[in-house]
Picture 1 (tube, rainbow, N blue to C red):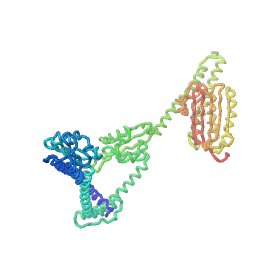
Picture 2 (picture 1 turned 45 degrees about the vertical axis):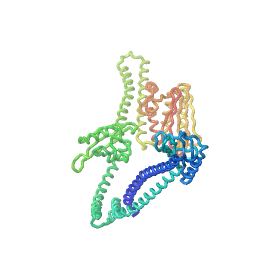
Picture 3 (picture 1 turned 90 degrees about the horizontal axis):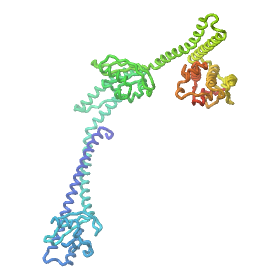
Picture 4 (picture 1 turned 90 degrees about the vertical axis):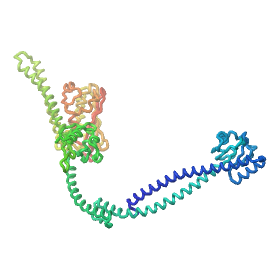
Amino acid sequence: MLRSRLFWKLYAGFAAVLLLTAATVWVLGARRVRETALSQLRANLVASARILERLMTEEPPLAPAALRSIVNDIGARTGARFTVIAADGSVLADSAEPPDEMENHAQRPEVRTAAETGGPAFVTRFSRTVRLDMMYAAIPVPGGGGTARVALPLTFVKARLADLGKNLVLALSAAAVLSLVLGGLLFRAIARPLAKMTTAAEAVAAGDYETPIPHHGTDEVGKLAVAVGRMSGQLRERLFALTEERNRLYGVLSGMLEGLVAVDREERVVHMNGPAGLFLGVRPEAALGQRIWEITRVEPVSGALAEVLAGRAESSREVRLPKPLRERVLELHAAPFRDAEGRVAGAVLVLHDVSRLRRLETVRRDFVANVSHELKTPLTAIRGYAETMLEAKDGEIDAETSRRFLGRIHDQTLRLSALVTDLLTLSRVESGEGAVVRAELDLRGPLTDCIRRFSADCLERGLSFSGDLPAEPANVVGDPEALRQAVDNLLDNAMKYTPPGGNVALRCANQGDRVMIEVEDTGIGIEPEHLDRIFERFYRVDKARSRELGGTGLGLSIVKHIAESHGGEVSVTSRPGAGSAFRITLPRHTSPAV
């Protein structure tokens, strides 16, 4: 019984009310007791002061010595301080100090107030004479006969108040304890059957439908037990059916690659699957219960759902998500769902990621445009020279001009051949791992061939060339011809864009589980705004210079795809006018090269 939450809730509420009542009574009662005690104390002080008043008005007047003796005797018997003050403020008698040693009391607050009002005056202050906090009561003696004053230490006053407060606390505590005991017994009798029913109902809620629900007669509690038992059976049947249906639905939704968001009539999210959370940049669990426009700033998403909830049959659109959510292109399709009465109960939004498709379309368009442009330029030149020669009459073109035209045609043909060769190479490396012949090899072999070939080419161009290969094997798994071509492209670019007198260097080094190939030059360098795009197909920093040097705009793109097809990556650092450094990093193979 003591473990019953219902009992403790009822009992705690009762105890809180009781204790709050007791505290209120204590606060009000203590204040009332204090006021009453202080009122009685003031009355007692005034009564004691009246005694001094009689002594001061007796006929014949008492001698000073007799007055002092009586005052000292009264003070010793009562524990209070009695003071007789003359009309001029001098002290005639005092039960605590010799009056001759005391200063004039005419300006003491209680004496001055009593003289001004003609009635009792009360003051609480620190006494410099006895060095204690005192409560003073002073009354004027009729006929200007002076002032009678009586004082008690506040310690005495506080002790009286403490005694009264202690008695009040004891009375309230006894009443509270008795009430709590009786209340506990009463609530226990009420809560016991309800606690048993609560335990049984919690078992049913947890899925245990076999727990018996106790009956307690034919009263309201017993009827409740019967109703709960009947409800438990019906709930079990319906829950099993709903669970089976829900599992089927969640299985379908979880297996979807498309994102799905369902909202109710008030645009609150009732379901969101993982892909939808990924597209919108939110956690599906955190989105439940939130309005759709509160969890995402993608206006077309909330807009499509709002249109459907407003009565539109369906809503479809395409939206491009901003970069903070990872730039994507989504196709949105929203449709309503209805309740049992056919009314719109909410809406479902399906988000289909078409980013890859749109990117491929863009790449295809750009590729066709770039290839057409690159092919058109040399073909136009060849056609122009050929038509000029064909249309010329005998003797109009001399042999030297003919040779120059034929040389131009030859150069453009070589450019076309290089372009077609690079396109075929790029197609091969982009076609997947099946196009790469993989074998274990030591990179020092292919790189030695590159050093041998390009040393002579650099010498012809007036460039210095250096090669630095590691002493230990630089083993990788890959296509030696593809890797040689990647390095050749980087060295070729380094020679083309480095003025005579410059330097070109090829280095290779083992760096833990990676192998790094670096081609560095002291050429013209690359502006920072071009560094992110130089590996794109047909992208040229200086188009005129690139065409003049015979570049196709595909070399670095080929390098990038070769590196990535080998599980590596390519990077570049450059400063305009100071040269560039291209690095290919590949996974290192730990076994010896074959």
